[in-house]
Length: 114
Length: 112
Image 1 (tube, chains in turn green, orange):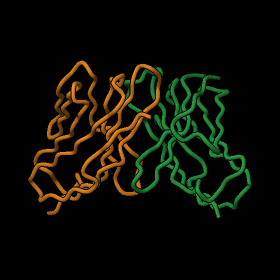
Image 2 (tube, one colour; image 1 turned 90 degrees about the vertical axis):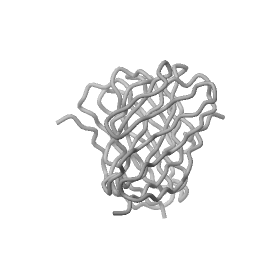
Image 3 (tube, chains in turn purple, orange; image 1 turned 45 degrees about the vertical axis):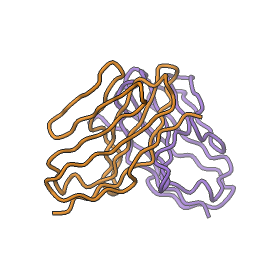
């Protein structure tokens, strides 16, 4: 089944404790992206990747890191999480990295930073 | 910076009525305008999209219109049904890169 998966789905952590949210897609998509969703603010893009080893900042990259060592995986790293990073996070992928292709979203990761 | 404004934030309609959601974008280089539907507790899913070389696109009860001059695009849902109740997001992206800017969302309630 073609899909985007994220792990973990739910995470409660404490300020300053490094964490990684994994994202994997099995559709051979070149483009992958991370968003955070907050009430009243919609989806805001954190980072995106057009291909392996090619990443760029979205609108809200501060406090986050990403890597794209393999085509299928695009992990989101929070080196020192803070309470303002409490949010619902979505990973998405798109075919061929073109700007006008549908993005397929993962199921989301709800992160709480205490 | 670039932004997408979406209105209204909440919309309540009677079953069978039409619903219209409007978005305005700021980046004139934007050339792709998708609409995503997000049901409660679920992931966003594409319902319709339009490219800048087209003024209108229709798919059954859903249509999208684009006015590039005014930088406006709208989602029209006709004959609304209770299962249309969800949050709808508009978005804009352009050839200058692969940034996608989403609107803040519209929560649509369809009352039976």
